[in-house]
Length: 557
Image 1 (cartoon, helix red, strand yellow):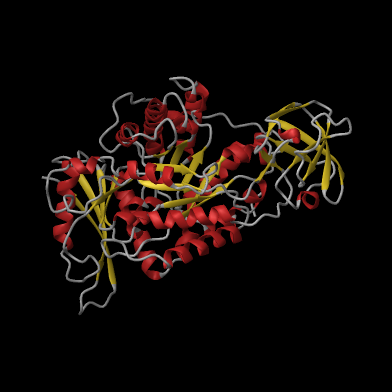
Image 2: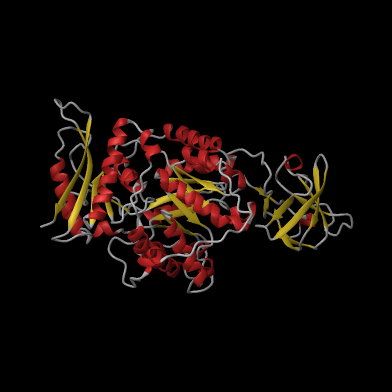
């Protein structure tokens, strides 16, 4: 259980010179070929649903594409169109010269990942009295929340205004004196009476309300399933089209995460092999923390999840907004400690929906998220519906790059002894080699870490120790490669080889040499630079081990 008890202010110790020394040099230069260490998630929408716009996003630093299903119906033609636009855009590796690695006939155009963001089990208002489009709620007005149809009711009933909500258990969930928040907290109602099928409230402040607006019950237990019927349809579609991540909305308990994973596993089992003969991989589950129950159960939720999204929009309604920054820092720190990717999301550059430049507060917000250790930062309305989608991405990338330099200068390789002790002996060996590689890269001023990763395990192990140099992860399966896109510092590149990496007869020496040539070709390193190489090799017939874990240090010639 996690508790945020920030009820009293405490005096902050004065920063000393060593604490701020690394802030002295600001590098206001062009982004390097490796781009930002921190990953950037962009939401597609009306402002970016053309081939030209998607290519602009791919070319300017987007790593993961978010498809928002909150308002999507049962027709999947639009998300399929968006997905096709992403898959057909040209990534940097397409520009590489013909060689053993990249120019396979079936090589993907790019390795941008797809994240399907589910609607989740949420509560919303229904059609309004007299079927009006909008009704004004006055401060001090009495409001009756009910699950029954109110379209035939009067919008000017002197007793109270009736609002329909789509939550059958509302009378059992609320408590007298607690608040019910409408439309992202813009209207606050206080519960004054509870009857069997309705809840009478007093409007603490007024404002307009429309149908299909969100209803939040902060601090109260919600009796909703982990997955709605719509979510299940959307998750099945995500598996069928090969989405890489699923953002599961309104996760409250570890059981919610297990339900999502179990349903995805059932969907994957029903699918035929891919064109290359490989089995489809289950989309990785990113749990969205959006309410107090999710914060309270965070440790258990993290253990079951593949990653976390700090969804600050609903979270800022469900818990006091003064605690959101503390909850964010707590979640990022705990994700870092176990090596699971964490996305900080919502309103990061919100003003750029309307303006071509971010506010100074927004710049600080993005920079602080990076300095806290976020693996990824996300753009929502900025790229989905904003006037300046590409400018917002460029601004995000510029801020992240500046913060990356400070983070890398201060960073110390993460080591979690408790996590290490719980690993299998084989994984302990990999964990130790990965930690050594990250430390060696920093101590020896290496330019890049290269690794060969068939399943993604080697790449994830290196990422867990927070490398301060770019890491090129050579993969044989594009599914595996795309699933590495949320890990800070990891750049996946396709490795086309006729060799079976699972075979003990594979020549890893030749693969390492090709990896070094590619590192030079894409501008990550040049002659005279030091490179750290990491891989996991299967043992040969007469060896007395199943795998060997290797780290090599070389200087390019």
